[in-house]
Length: 145
Image (cartoon, rainbow, N blue to C red; front, side, top):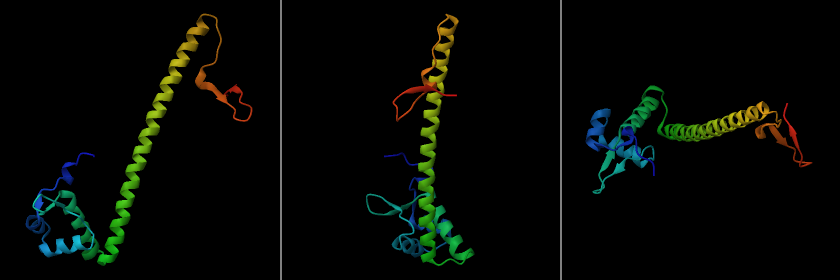
């Protein structure tokens, strides 16, 4: 399980969250019932809201009050935004993997190139392994470039 960020740490009881947002606690309960948010619960089943939850309610308020979106529309928009965020996180993870593999490839190519330079300085000649491409059909190896 991943560690929660400070913004995701549940710290506000419903009355405090409602005051911060200038809404009635019933509004927060309604948003939860509609599935627009899911506050954490403590051992005594008391709702606890995080800064992320508070920001989510502010987004709901903006969509409903400033943009004129009804709660059904808000649900769709929030779902799309949540999915977009998950996709962004997955893409960031994949990009990190690609960067890591690229760094490994470059490091390996450098080492092979250094080894080839040493061989050539001794009068030997061989191509670095990373510059060879295996052709699938013939199963043969040829040099790139």
